[in-house]
Image 1 (cartoon, one colour):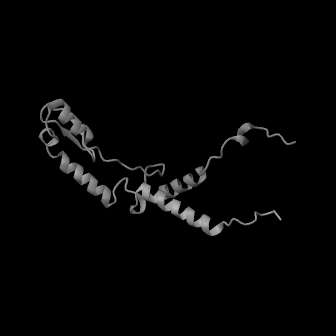
Image 2 (cartoon, rainbow, N blue to C red; image 1 turned 90 degrees about the vertical axis):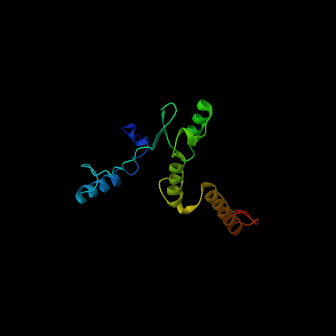
Image 3 (cartoon, rainbow, N blue to C red; image 1 turned 180 degrees about the vertical axis):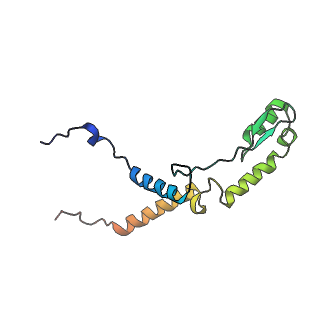
Amino acid sequence: ACVPQTISHYIMPESNKAAKKRVQKANREAGIGDENGRIIREKEPPKMSKCSVCHQEMKITKTNTELTAHATSKHGKTIEECFPGAKETAEEMKAAMNKGGKGSPAGGMTKAERKKKAAAGMDDMLSAGLSAGKKKGQK
């Protein structure tokens, strides 16, 4: 019986470490990215709005649930009274998402639609490829 010298043989392989290094080297040679050849994506800062009543600053999101909850629970007012312009900013964010901005679903389909399509494809494959006849190896 052959016993390995080290336990490292049983550890998961380092997936695509070499390929990543090759890409980083090519990026360095092309002058792309930082000094190590890594591509760094800069995230734009979140859009903030200040409450006109208590001057608390909060982040504007696509749904503005925190802003709405703050306006109704703390002040008993609408979101437009407390955070003027927040609704328009949220609509712009939604439009950017639908246009294909960050986080848009691949191919324009939602996750549920992709799942349904995959399930339909599996049903087609199963119905086309499998029969209820004899199994392999049986006589």
